[in-house]
Every structure is written in structure tokens, then in C-alpha cells.
Image (cartoon, helix red, strand yellow):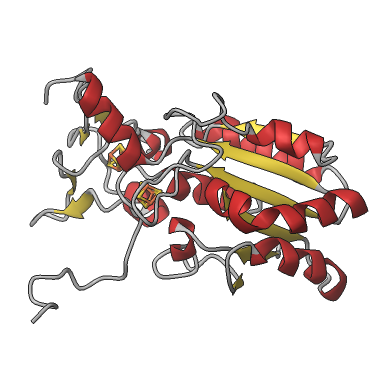
Length: 263
Ligand code: SF4
Ligand code: SF4
């Protein structure tokens, strides 16, 4: 009975989820390079599932770092690891200390969405949008520096080209490095917007400009997208979060903000 009315599809990232944008950028930055990805526990655990199917190991909280520390000796391909800010503080610190101390040969992506999103947007030591017992959060990059990480890159996954370019540069540098992909969880951000009375402004397809390449759907899989009866891509305004990542992917500039254009 519980299954009645459920959509027939695997679980997926929310519209506007920064993890989808981060994963898209990592794949673009490593396009054509065979590599191994050790992932971890959080919303981004959906990465190895359909439709993204990106990720080679998924074990337990914090395991991405331990697995990558070992894999660098076992495989010929470049190794990367992916962990969220919350899981990093929960169980990633020992593996990080080891990687920094040994200058391990892999890159760590920390998907910093500000909260423990998977279990309901609880706070963690990194959360900026809350009050802290000690008055301030444990700033990720400061903790990394304190543990001896010398190569730290910070990107905003909603800025697609800049993120891919910075990731490419970071991936080419030798030794251990950390790329922090920082953008608040879309659901958490929306709650704050609501509290402050700020609107969510969805995107829309300009049907005159759309040439039906379907890059928006094939490359990004945002669940706000669907096809209408004429196989025209459409965006559900009640689902769209207005992140505009899809707008940056369309070669025909056919994805526009409803803030700018009345269609
Ligand atoms: S809850 Fe937040 S982090 Fe998790 S899938 Fe949704 S937007 Fe992404
Ligand atoms: S702007 Fe595009 S990618 Fe972002 S939530 Fe809306 S439809 Fe999805």
C-alpha cells in the first residue's frame, strides 16, 4: 500500500541540489581520464545510482578517505574521493590527517552544503547558517590548513565554467589536495529564503530558441524537467529552484529566468 502513488524512478537529488552540480563539474573536469572515485555517506551516496552512475566504492561514513588512501597504491588510474562536510566532521578527519601527513596521491572533494542534509538539514560544526555553542563554526579550510593540507581550492558549483576550470587546474597538481565545492543545500537554502520572505524565481524554456538538443535533460537530469506531448523540454515552475545551472549548459541560450523574460 505504501508504494501506491510513488514515482517509478530511483531516488534522486532535489531540483537545485548543489551536489548534482558538483558531480557534473567533477565529471567534466575529468572527461576522458579513466579514474577511480571513492564516495561516502550522504545525499551524494545517490551518485553511483541511476541516472548518474558515478562512483566506484561506497562503504560507511568516512570510508572514502581510508579507501582512497589505500587505492592510490593498488590502482594505476588517478584516485579521487568525495565526502560531504557533515560526514567529514563525523568520520573523515583521521583519513584526512593520514593523507595530509603522507602527501597522498589523490584529491579529495568536500561537498560543502552547510548542513547534514540527508537526515533532515541538522546542523554540524561547519554549518554557517546557525548559531554555535562556541560562537562560530569550525571553518573547513581553517581545519584543513591546521591538519597540514597545503593545496586547497574553493569553488561554487553553481558557477559551472569557473568550477570546471578550477577543478582541472587542481587535479593537475601533484600530491594530496582538497577541493571544497561550497553551496548550501537547496532545501535548507529555500527554508531560509522563506523565513526572510525572499522569492524562489524559477527558470523557463524559451521554446523559440530551443533546438531540442536535450542537453539540459541528458547532461544534468534535474527532476524539474520533463517532455511535453510534442517532446518539448519543459520546466515545472513549482519544482524549479532557480539555480540556473541548466541555463549555463544550454548551447542555444534557451533556458531563461522568469525574472528576466515573460514568455
Ligand atoms: S536535501 Fe539538499 S543536499 Fe540532499 S538532495 Fe536535496 S538539495 Fe541536495
Ligand atoms: S534552474 Fe534548471 S537545474 Fe536549477 S532547479 Fe531549475 S530546472 Fe533544475
